[in-house]
Length: 415
Ligand SMILES: [Zn+2]
Image (cartoon, rainbow, N blue to C red; front, side):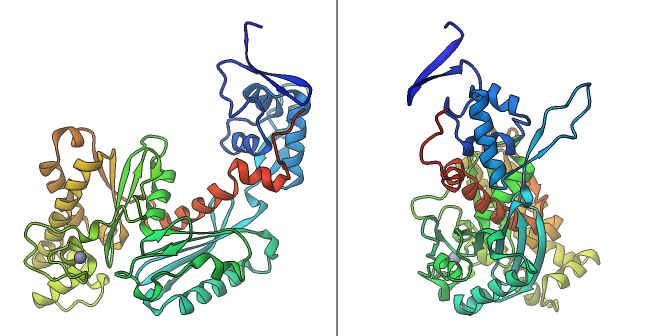
């Protein structure tokens, strides 16, 4: 018995779990076995048995359940080393789709993704979210209907939305009156579920973008990341210990309304003065350039001036970066992230803004917090929101408990 660890007694049979092996449980359920297959830790039935300590019949039963429900596919075209190669098991990402939308203040990315979060169809729209949920939500649902392109409703496994507002995540209720007045207090999931009767998840737009960027680009290296979105407005998403930091009411990351030292006395739409949002956002850059006599109505106009080497424009953009840097430096001192990612269309287009942030953060943050700090531009760009929304849904619908419920497993199978 020396090599055997936990002994568990269940419905008349003794089960053993080898010591020192990674195992979710000595009675790993079908949902937990699926996790091993999705992560690539287990590729064959033998792998599953070795990792979980389950008996061969128990492994066979769980795999059969996953195959029956289309969650796993089996291939026998593995490398030939003489004899019949063991069947290789793979997660069936094509076994369903999720409907996602990443809403910004003035645009929306709407997509259909597979169960790995890959985009199968995507539509980008200019849209004013202030027109309210009665206009915007039906529009999203119509686009999804087109993107489904004849797929049956049973293929839809979940819906994920990122919205530019503070969100009470558990209820999917938008809370912020400041950003989207017409959405305040709206509980989004039932409105979507009336047409798409599947689990619906809603989170703050920057939280989902931060999670998308983190999971796809950084999760293997770091656990703590600060994502700052600089677009029409400024917001942030905080990844702490690999999870989104929400705060008591879901309002963590609202850095747009932290004031800077010397913004010039600009009145912010929130009623305070010199919030970083009012002096360093895309809106602020356009306003400041107009005040200096530049004819700009969109960020594309600003890009043209930057490319033309217009000194005044470079000055305005770099100043915005420095002002943003003040606030980011404070956040770095507080949170000690390994990476600060600057995303959103303003940060993605304007290197002088990123340079301004770097300059101030490395000067103002403590030596310890910047010793190995990286400040990067978003690698995923506009795809981060879609990816983050898809992962938010997939993480929930493929969580072991949810899978076990779908498999009809009430308690761990006891073979
Ligand atoms: Zn403000």
